[in-house]
Length: 365
Ligand code: GTP
Ligand code: MN
Ligand code: MN
Image (cartoon, rainbow, N blue to C red):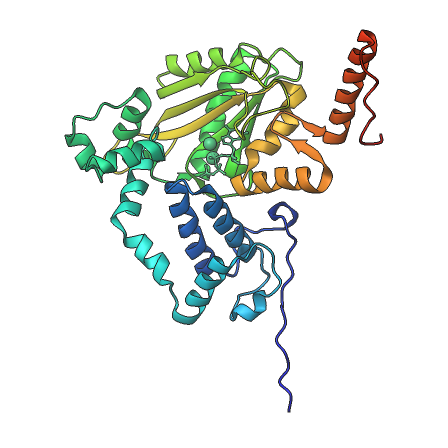
């Protein structure tokens, strides 16, 4: 009697942005294991490995049912040898030794705690660990010099590591809305980030600010920030200018995923009534990101700031590889059009100089 061959029971598109992914899914123990390894890779600045684990976790989150055997995963995209090994272990033993070892390692835990301080990145955390600083107490006792952001991060560590609730987000939306509409009638406030994706909690609250008339958004950030400050609502803020037009590589050619909108990293002070402060406290600190965009770039900014990080990354990869387009938080370009425009410009220049024959257009329009 022939055994029925087990075939892949699931199909999943190649890019995370092509999949429907729900908040609650069928394989949390598998995706948690892979996410922890992704996190560890990020903390050790191994971005290639981090993205590989994030992609693998995303595939598992998109599956329509619980996985019971690795054979069900045959043919699915983004599942490399390493990820499959982890999945196999978890399916067999309920855990994976690599994940458990990492989870309990001193370095992983120290990096997590230290980078959990607002303003502290992996490079700084790694330096502190080499100096023998593994936790907040050791950092506080050491004579380490902190910058303004890190000092605020350390001062409000407990609050900032408490999840922000949807109710907190709504209450901050009201505050920002009030500030914006009293200072700039007509200007718009849009809640974005994880809360726009329907998450019930987040690590911060993200907003896009714009004005329906192009150019009228100028000056908005400074005014809003001063107003919030005058109301005693800010524990910390750092505003950076829009550098989109003046940047070296010019509009539409961002050198990294970071955009060039005017933005403000802030820590809000929410009092009772606006939030539920921890027991015995009158207020709590909450991280808020404000971003100002001209209306002409608003759609791209909204798409770029809604997240998740992996979704955004996959959307850009899909645009580039499958559609020959270039997507950023500022614009969407057809790369073939850009190349043709360049050729046309070179030809015009060459012809006007009468030195060389025209360059032919490589890509037909
Ligand atoms: P939680 O805040 O943890 O709930 O998750 P989140 O998805 O809201 O993450 P976060 O607030 O870090 O970022 C929100 C979205 O904005 C993510 O998709 C990021 O990719 C994006 N984002 C964050 N910083 C930048 C930036 O400097 N430029 C651009 N273009 N996007 C950014
Ligand atoms: Mn967020
Ligand atoms: Mn944010």
